[in-house]
Length: 122
Image (cartoon, rainbow, N blue to C red; front, top):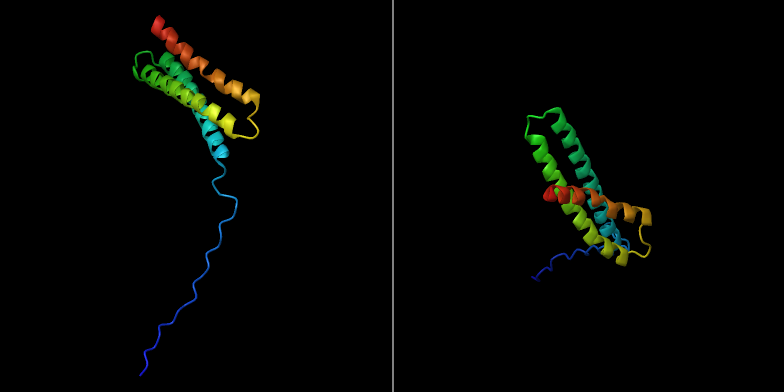
């Protein structure tokens, strides 16, 4: 009796990965992250403005001013992250974002920074 060799099934060849990654290039990923931080700054500033309206509507409540202060701080921190990402995005991209978007993103920080400085000084 001879020993029977086990069946060897042909291994399926794995498809080779395509050159295009579904995630995208690092420049695209950082650009999207930068734009998301800019949009977060806009959302926090709009929420802060809404909290001012709520504080005016309900003057006895302490919640709207507290929420406004948290949103203002979140806007400032998000803006600082956006400004930290901006030089990296400009360095990695072959074509920089439109200058109007860059200037708008930089100018967004003026509101929370100015409000915080005016509150600290006065």
